[in-house]
Length: 296
Image (cartoon, rainbow, N blue to C red; front, side):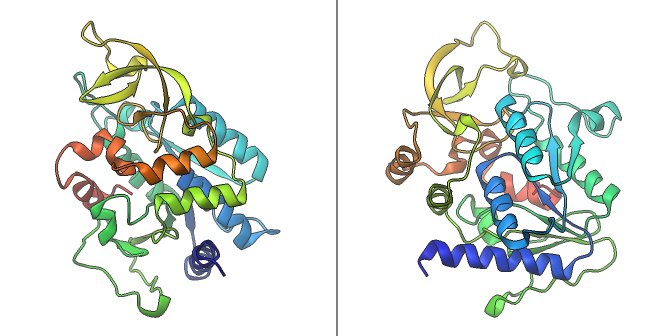
C-alpha cells in the first residue's frame, strides 16, 4: 500500500464506524474539494448500496454559483438525499442579525442555521471534511469530536483515540462531529483527486474573473461585497484554494489550469490554504472561538 491507499483505507474505516455506531448521521457538504472527496470515499465505503446518511448543505445565499451548480449536478449523479439549511431563513425568522458594513459576511451566521438543522433532523453525528493541517484549532480536535447539547465544543473535553478505536457514545442531546480525512494534508487531497480523477467545481482551476483587492486579498466582485467607489474592479487570472462564502473567501493569482499545475503550485506555496479565508483573520483564536460556539 502506498500512503494514499493507507489514507483512503483509514477514511473508509471511519465512515463505516459512523454508520455502525450512530442512528442518524449526516455528511456535511460544502461543495468544496474536501467534502467532494468525502462523497467519493463514501461511494467506496457503501456502494452498491445507498449511503446510510443524507448530505447536508448550509447555504449562506452568498455561495459561488459554480459551487451550487456543481452540488446539484453531483446529487443528481449519485442519487442521494440532499438537505439544505438556508441562512436567509434564520435571518428572516430573527434568529440571527445580518452584519452591516463594508466587510459584512454571513459566514459566521452559518453556525445557528447548522445547529437548527442538526436539531430539526435529529442528527447524532455529522461528518465533515476538516483536516488538521488547515488551522491550529482544527489540529487540536479528535476524529470523533463530541459536542454538547448546545452544539458547543470544549477542547479540554476530548476522548483518547488509541489504536484507531473511536468512542461514539453520547448522552441525549449531544452529537459528534467526525473528520475522516483529519490526517490528510492539502497536498494529499489533491494527489488523491488526481489519482481518482474526481471532478471539481471550475473555480478550483485558473480562470478570468472580476476581482477587487480588499485587506490585501483578491475577492470576487460579487454584489453583496458592498462594493463602493474606493474599490477598483480588475479582471485577473485567479483560482480558489478553498471554497466558502464569497464574502470571506479570497482568490489567488494563478495560471494553474490542470491538476499537475495545482499540485506544483501548492508545493511551492509558503501560505496555508486557510490563508485565503478572511474569517480566520479576525483574531488569533477566530476559528477556535467559532468551533466552541458550534461551527464545524
